[in-house]
Image 1 (cartoon, helix red, strand yellow):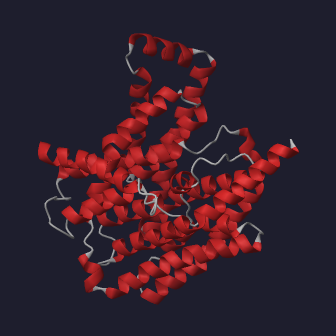
Image 2 (cartoon, one colour):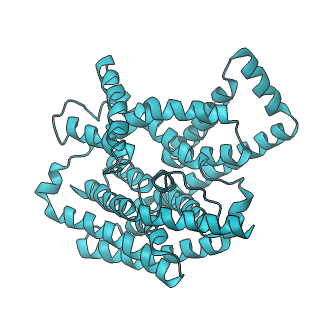
Image 3 (cartoon, helix red, strand yellow):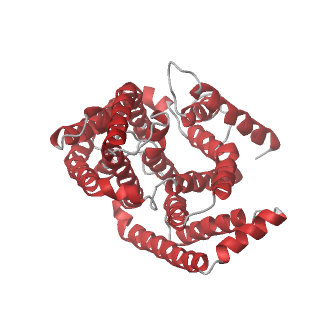
Length: 386
């Protein structure tokens, strides 16, 4: 690890947003960051060594922060979200049920033995991808609230299930570790809730703002890294720790100032560093050497879109909305990070998972305009009715 590498990461942090700024192709920022990591890592020029312990550890910090942001964006305190909760939960559950035979079928077809993992991938969604693609359309109508709730439920469930599904041989240990992280998160939520009700949180906020001490940021990072410590000791990925910490913050309700500080810390440095490290650790040469991995990636992407669209058709959900719920990012990225670290994948399999995610992202970019029109129309109808 060197200052040259840090400078390179900061440069990459600019490349992602620049690629995402093009209007013709709306690429997520992380695609540019992953792409640069692939170019400079094991696949391309090999200027970056992803096995460097310091670089890998900083990448894990970035991973935890990325998942923290994802968890904090789950609108737990939004009372309006309850209007669409029942139907959304039903759709998410049906997607999960249909993903099981599809995932196990793909695993049997390619003889990988990763049926549980593929089922979780097919059932997953990504609110962090879908919401930016909707270009800020108000999500206040009933269909929009159902869509938002479905994304949140699928996100949360699949992130919890991923550590259990990726390595079934150690699922018992992973389950105990996940329970430890969830219990620690629940305890922290109770402590923070009591402090908030007694007015301690507000007094701390005023003191921090008056003295410019960023006390809440320090406490939030303490919360995050404490859960990451529990995850590490329990042999569970920091992915779950970051997401649970984000859920706790969302449930308690943090000031916008703290959210902005965490977002700046993550998106300004640690998240790009994580995606560069992840891209550098992948060797896409294996896709050329193992063409079946390309077919596997296509199969996973197409199956994800098919399962979500079919459930949408059965439950009378607009097909553009159903296709949006097939968007994958956080769960496949987490799976690749976990599988690469533990050497669980066959050559090219990790790259195949990302290829499948890219296919779902392409589907989102295609259906987003139609979904935006339907959401805008539903919002106008709700406004007239009220």
